[in-house]
Image (cartoon, rainbow, N blue to C red; front, side):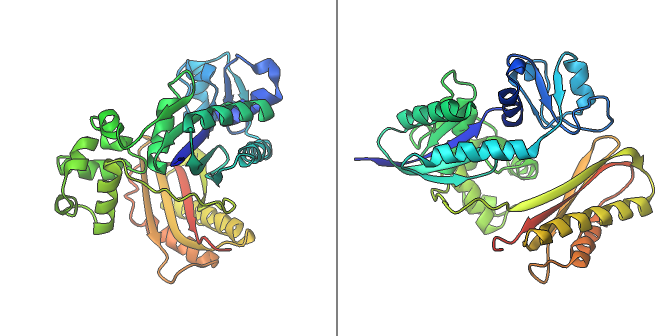
Length: 347
């Protein structure tokens, strides 16, 4: 009898892989994709680097100038989103041909679920189909829920076969000694709070009672943390077309901003531009977040849910962003500003 399994598919170095697919002469060479593709241009960052470039220490989010210093022989290319969207669509079409449920997570990842006799065999077949029909490679994690499958993908990227499995039986032996930050969805702030509670490892968190966790977290968050530390997670595969949950916009300035008036002006412009794009797509904003990166590269974020519910009012969106700006201590020149809008799921 078939069992229910979840598989997480993650396309390898997606942007760079698509570029190599379009330009076969780049195969085996270090390829770096980002910005305008010009590594001499100030304050642009790497979007994706091929495995060959990563061997030189090039990583996503790294300044392009630094990438050029680490790997001067790399081929630098501008990001071409229409090409990546088209390649992603071909991959998802390939995955949908299998008798399973598919949940698209973004351009380069998806979950697959169903009553599956042999999940490892299915993963092998999926990898082969994506490579044969689209020309791209992927890593696949297998688990009893999305959390296990997502984390298993990290191990799959280190496995020659590109496939790895985590189950209820193997969870604690594999993950127990690892830091809580290795859990999917647990960020630095949560890690810091768990450290304060004396819970640095996943095993520590799994053994903690809810009352201890409620000292620093709301009840719902405490239950969620306890569940994922034990290897729990969501098993629902949503097959409806993927809809972005948020949109963001940010700018790295050619010269650091030192005057508050200039920072306010730029943040207002950024928030209204983002809001206009969201409205044009027929979506509504429910939460606004602001990111500020100083000249020392110290990065802070603040966010707030809109008090009066979902909106398309640009004044409300920009006003909320400015309210978040008041929560920052702008003691250093500002290198980067960013705005994120969390979106209402409906259209």
